[in-house]
Image (cartoon, rainbow, N blue to C red; front, side, top):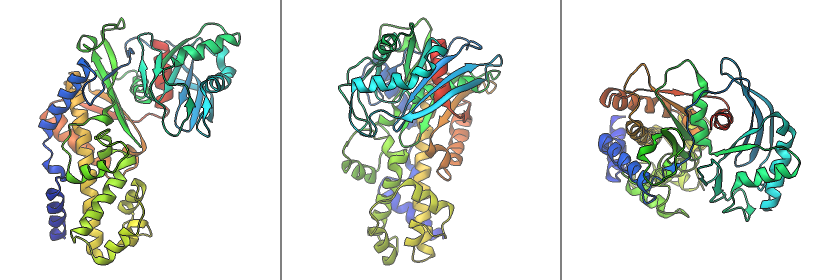
Length: 433
């Protein structure tokens, strides 16, 4: 068993893919440098997008706010009210198809459909929090210019539109009074959702972190450090959408580079391609196939694995959970050595992903300057299927949080999981901004 483990470590080291060879402190410092670069200009790999949103201010009790949440396949509408104990009460919750997800539509059709969806609740509030999870340049008035739509959602002519302004115009055209709209993305909404999690808890600051199909992080920065903009909100701080999936300075291995060259977007989203649900399964697949070429597996296993067209993270998780059961990877194994070799490759790749995620969080926390007092930790609201469902990931991340962030750096955090965090966060944005 130890011999098999040693062979896997040697193979990964030869390809610069072994997690222990990533220096934590140096990598953390590199991440902070890229954060600082992104706050000065748009030249770095971390975009550090100003949101003009703050977490300051008290959530008003018993004041309804309309929430819209535009995702990849669904468009959600709800009314949220915070009771006297600041607990969110969600009513009028409805899920509709995302306009443009089934066929290409015009921007006029999109706006009309959005107003159709929200019209039944328009008389229930004068503020709207709109969680719009597509690349958007946020404006000082909290509206946003659409920069890009995903391949799954096709809306002709919407690029360059000020989205909130267009929605409000159509609402007014239908005879409704003036509304105020705030645009934010899902990561920012997740951060804000943490504010409602435990009102009595003394968190010194907040981070929103998503690790699902993709990955992103946002945090709270002092306005005086955001040198690339001149217009600020009245607060002394602002939520920054880091677009951390695009970070490009992490130490990559040979297989990472080969994998990236095969993508339709080489040299982009390099960090995301090492850790997120969309890419980690295929990256592990490529690593396994290279291990086959290096004779780490039996000929039978190599033949079986090469007959597979693809591998996703769900397949990987199924093997880790049930390595002797009837699943894709287990069925490829010819003997126990194959099974152990496969386990160690996967386990070390997940270890590496958890370590570099910890590096990014450590850099974010250190840059914020918050969380030195263990009685007032930084609240990290985490969301995403990869974070919660990938076997072993959370435990590995917890190890680096304790070892590096707590013990070596002296910062303290608390991870929280919150149901409907984007909806609740969008409600808070609509109420306090």
